[in-house]
Image 1 (cartoon, one colour):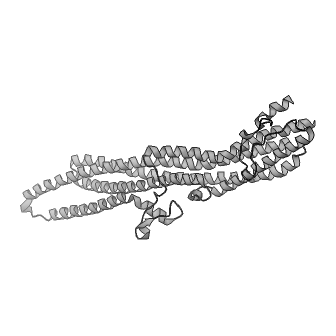
Image 2 (cartoon, one colour):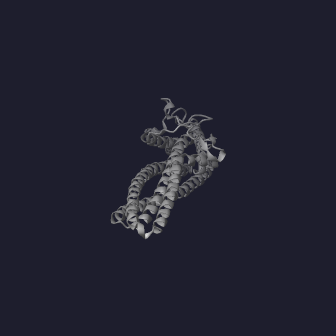
Image 3 (cartoon, rainbow, N blue to C red):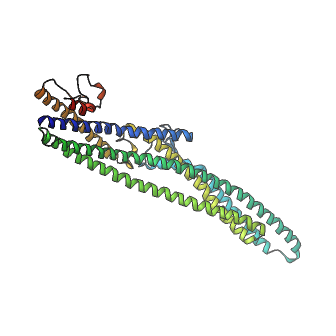
Length: 396
């Protein structure tokens, strides 16, 4: 009967040692795996980001260089990053000013034509034909620019959403993976605790495993809840940007098509109205082009921040959107679990030595203090590996 209890201890150790050790490396392994996907995305875009890519002109600081790095809580980071879309903003402003000037010219020409003397009717007719010709040429020029701006916005929209969705998945899945890892570990700890009940180590194991598993579950719940909340917020913002872009592009294309139709049919007033609408929508398209240029830079900065998150999650600026404090705290608890498993295996070996002499010793899969690293390959040939425990126990 006593040997059966020892066997339960050995099998329980088999379960928890393997699961916990794999889960400990999973916290880092998931980030490394996701980082490889991130690097592939960056290679495809042809714009590998460096650590100093955030050095940009800051309009809020007298146009000096911003050198504070990626920090989504810093207004100067946002101003310098938003300012990278100045090309689109500038074209939109210039286009709007030209539109206002063009509109004033149309109003002045229309007002002057109405005051022409009836004696100059024939000349006025020629002038009107000349005026209409310029109107058609303006409509054609506007159509070309509108289609160009629409194409740029469509391209920027597709590229941004592809990168943004992938980056969001990587960030949030990292947190989800960490919480799932912790849940798996606590399940193994519960099974180990159940397996040790009724043995000499039952009370000691319960005092360690039960409160530790509860702490880990709380940390996992916090990570999961925070990840879900931030994911919904990010997806909502991306959806708003997508809807606004789609509406502007659709209206712009409809106005361009209508402009061509009414231009052929010579509906002058309608043509003037459509030119005005196309001008406004084209201005919005150029502005959106600047916005997407800024968002593309922001996505690149986030990719770089993920590298920093891999090396030091606690000091990463991603802590504003990721539950990094919970991740670090959970990793600390998992460290305690490693130390606890290491200690329990040593105690089991001591009991085996006392009761059975040198008949068998279990290889401790964790190294000694202070690291407690998982090192199953360092087992000597005279010890029983944790993975071989069930078979060896049956042989004895």
